[in-house]
Length: 194
Image (cartoon, rainbow, N blue to C red; front, top):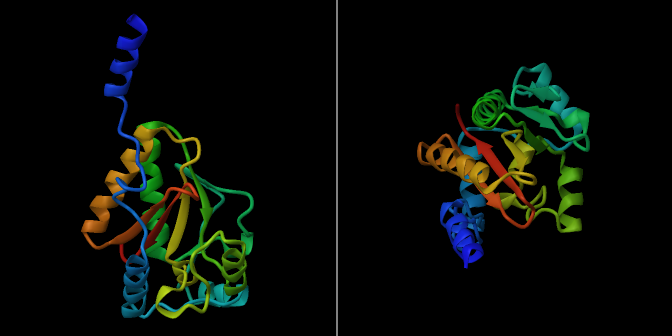
């Protein structure tokens, strides 16, 4: 009896679990089209190669993202030659991560930043990404260096809900768009301005 009451109290106090049906940041083809429309409207080019990323860096159109920042770290599997973002996306990552750090004293794990066309097509062939590099209005936004992914592995539901609330608010302001990809267990965050 005491055990059952204790379980009920724990369930009532626990934050609600995010499911596919209750996900406020559910990804969709329409969402991906919107992200690409915004990137096109801003005149942001897509990269194809590491050389394209390097050229954007020389032109000050992308910034290097350091391996460990206040509130985040980049997963080791991310290619060092693609650890770049457009300046507004980098600023957003830094502020987003600092806010998370202040509340939870944990670092966000960044699992992807800018991607080359060959890497994007490789991920698509493996089934790890929905879109390829040459898919027009539904191509990956990682090719524009405006997008980063944050793993939710190891996060509590409270932490996930905190990040969802922040992302939903910023999406409503038109600064960003974001998906919570439940099956691949990460946030996909696209920054338009910041």
